[in-house]
Amino acid sequence: MEKTVLLKAIIENAIDGLITIDDRGIIESINPSACRLFEYTQDEVIGHNISILMPQPDKTQHDSYLHQYKKTGLARIIGIGRELTGMKKNGVLFPFRLGVSEVRYSGRLIYAEFIHDLSREKEAESKLQDYAALLEEQVVERTQSLRQSLDTLQKTQDELNLSLSKEKELGQLKSRFVSIASHEFRTPLSMVQLSASLIDRYASAFDTENIARHVAKIKDAVLNITAILNDFLSLEKLDSGKVKPAPSRFNLPEMASGIADEMQVALKGNQKIVFGHRGPHDMVRLDQNLLKNCIIILIDNAIKYSGTESDIWFYTKITETQCTIRVCDNGIGIPETDQKHLFEAFFRAHNTGTISGNGLGLSILSRYTGLMNGKVDFKSKINKGTLFTLTFPQ
Image 1 (cartoon, rainbow, N blue to C red):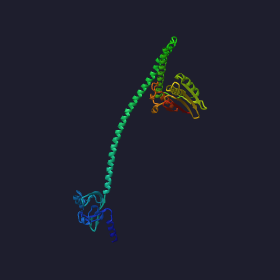
Image 2: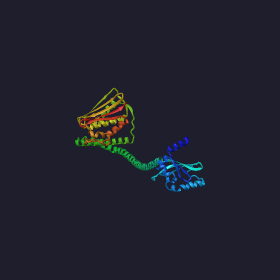
Image 3: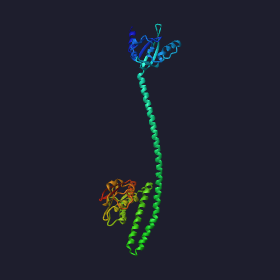
Image 4: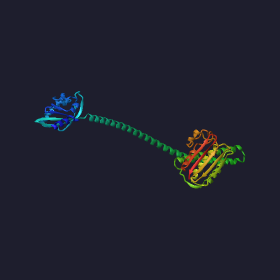
């Protein structure tokens, strides 16, 4: 008796639905879970064919399934289990898994059907499939987008390679042109310089001021063109990587004093170069030729952009850790708006007016200084002069 009560309690409180039918398919019992699942009361289903809980085509074929099983013993669901579709009282369909057991009791054949609702699982599965489809669609879209980007990138790369090839070709052509032009121009310029000197010598007997003045102009023009050619050749060598620092140990104040003497010929009017050396040391290890070119560029600019009564201050200093070179003038100065472009090739400040120059000097200076691991600093104010400082580690 207790076992019967216990069994009934288990069936009544089971989570899954449990329905028993006879061998004709008539419902004999249904537990509360199955009633809730199909939304029927016990009275509404007990005594009715199990097909009441089925949609078409199972609804009309269920009895033939039972008949066929009893005739052949070939089970389609019984003892196997299967996913089916159930139909609620209101006609709504839902998925469930059906497990059928065959029970012989008191000479009767009874089928116990265990019903597990699959609605949540199917819903989750459907969402997962939708999500997977969405992901697949996004993957396809992004793959297509990536392929287009790669195609665009490849096209850009090809165009860039073509441009670089053309640029390299133009660069090589420019280098050859500059090199050839620089060397080819030197010969006629030398002839012009020599001829001007001869004219000056032969005309001295006539003491003709006009001839001397024009000869001086010819010589100045030759010197200017030669300087321009030298700058172009220096720039070409820098661009092609031909300039390699060759450090050596030398006496800096001795070299600097020699440069100050050499630059006397370039002074205008009553200009003076004031040189001084500071610090306890004289020897440095740098590329002497590159450093000399840097100093000449700074002093030449100071002379060009200063008045005829100006002084150019030129100082060198060596300490335990660094070497410093300063060139200061009180000339026209550099406009603040131009200062950020000062070391760009071919750039000239807006206030240079008719003063000769090609805008290459400071660009070459900056690159020479960089090759020697140095740095360039400057301070400048309009009409109050400019101070350039070269600093090199020791």
